[in-house]
Length: 397
Image (cartoon, rainbow, N blue to C red; front, side, top):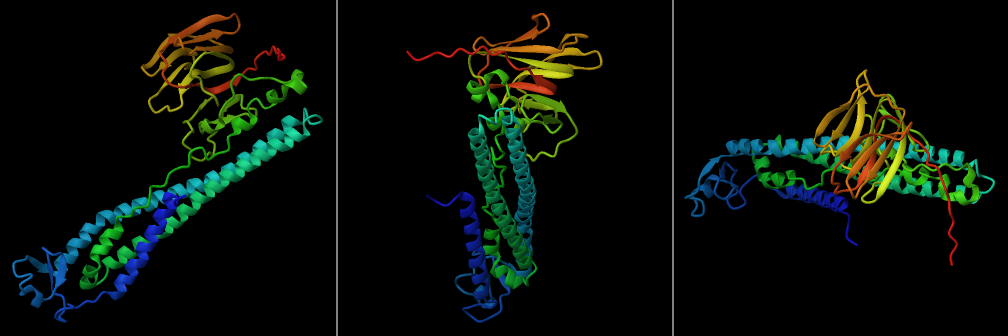
């Protein structure tokens, strides 16, 4: 198995720095052929020469400029790659801060997940002691693995910051050197300034998958205690929850709140929106939602960059209802107050319907030909209502 790209890039940069230090130690400031001081820079051969070299057969038809002019030109050329290096260093520092925050968040997630598991299992603890221990172990293992992944990224970023800082200091020191000394090493300095360290990236899926551990937790053991179990057709994915939402421990309720100190991760949405933990790419599905004055319910694609949302929402003091689609927002009803809404998706027919649960009245329908997986979408305050269970066990023939 080959080295990871990040580690290989760090090793190559370290080797280049060591080789450059060795070459710089061996460099001389006089012409090795004539033992004369370098006075000129040959623009054709891109090398320092003495006045005797200038008159030699090799250089007599070439173009020359004084060493100080050549050094100034090379220093100017180094300004752009040096600025690029400083920008990259800033990205590394920013990403390391986010990874530090992510590491703390993973630990908090693990603690909260364990706590919720234990509280839920108290209802069944007499029967499910072994299940409790097993699921807790899974959370701890995942937290350990995810923390290890984050620590590896932090180590990479730390080493990258050290190497980039050292590289920048070395280049700046070289630029402050005497002209001849600077020009002797300018080629290697220019090469070294083209840093090949990959840009730092946020690890995808690095957070604890809380939905996997907590979503429908009790339903997975319904055979033993099905009478006290509630099943939610949709569970929220807290890793997608916006910064102005808090998600309940059982993953069925979103609540508007003050800005939450979430780390940045690629799955997280903005402000007051959250997705369900499982998406749909075929079939018929429905879920019931209890809402307050301001809400938004519907479906959305995982990537919201292109505003791929199909929903209804309310805004304004009159509780006006709007339709939201990628084509834009349209006012559909005025002064409508709802408490419970059924969202019904027929993926194959491309029909998304909304019903008033009080009397099963159809509120609105959105038609669209879906071509990608869509997820239940919620904004503001929403509570997913448990489904009524009718369990039939089919015995094998």
